[in-house]
Image (cartoon, rainbow, N blue to C red; front, side, top):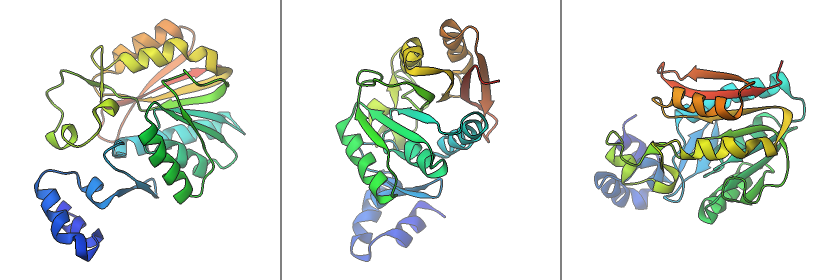
Length: 240
């Protein structure tokens, strides 16, 4: 289905002309319609949050399999939750889990709260700059942090011109948040635990080196997405 066909199918008839104009002006179709189907859940989006992508669905599918393999009643922290799509999906797919979701943006947390209510799940939303307001320990830490290099020239205009830059770009060649999370994460993880990251497809080995610095004795696994690109890193601690 083309974007024009999508707009025609899902627009309120009275908004159709204006929505087609917004599309022509380069606005992302998901923001025009106001939601996206993510892992079978309807997730509200606006310009305060990143548009959920297929790769993040893959991150969740892999993570859910690992969680079910290693834990019975998992305590999960989603850092940089944005729209809440990761946390909401985890709670729906693993009902006996406790899911906390954090974000530095109060505007994003407002959207995440709406999405949690609309999807009828109970997740705990926390305004926090990474671990700043986190005071518990978890079995699983999952994050799709900002990872685009500030100087990246490959990013598409529709992404650059629509989505919140705070959710896209990161200093240190896009590696800043991985380092910040990993260097402090042991204080917030149980002895048996794992970390799940979505990453930029060129960053796998640099992020693995960062992970080895803080978790030299852990099992660190790079996994590919459906396009055969390195897209996920899992760090397993005592998960035999």
